[in-house]
Image 1 (cartoon, rainbow, N blue to C red):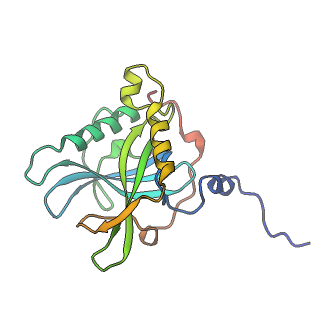
Image 2 (cartoon, helix red, strand yellow):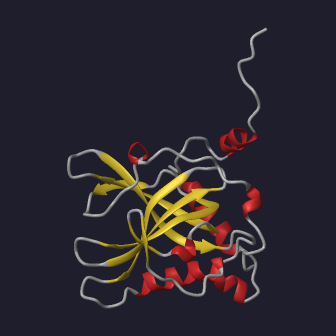
Image 3 (spheres, rainbow, N blue to C red):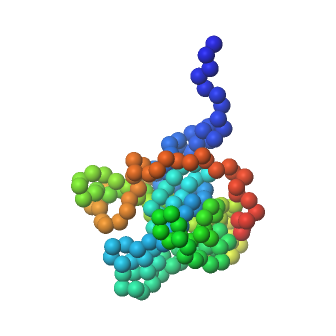
Length: 207
């Protein structure tokens, strides 16, 4: 008798999460911020670009939160999103430190978080199809609550809301013409690392 497979618990869990190395559909997913990189668009707008890995090892990159407009004024939506991310991860301040590919916010590296990601399809300038994700909501990796739900003593209603909404159209809206922003394409990601252990969700999570 020739053995064909040996049991791998991580691979089995990845199958339950939809399989593959990359997140490809709208979802509410728990995982880690692999890297938070300070970035600037060609227009001059400034942002914080997140690389995310789910607890089952699936990746979503180029998740950019723009906190400053090209004219130098604040982007209030982006500022509030960054504050929300800090709140649910227990980070009190963000700094700039040199990384392999630019300036990063080291305080967010490997921080557990739950994110609501909505897929957005578009048509690239060359006529090809692509997609990217929009961050709709940050939640605690432990409780699934937003920072507002935690402060107000509410249940984790936001997670259920986004899960229901995404279930109606997991593949995202119809494609639209590409703008000069990075996009998500599984073919352009680096190879996935070994999935993190669920034990990494430890007592550092604030609520």
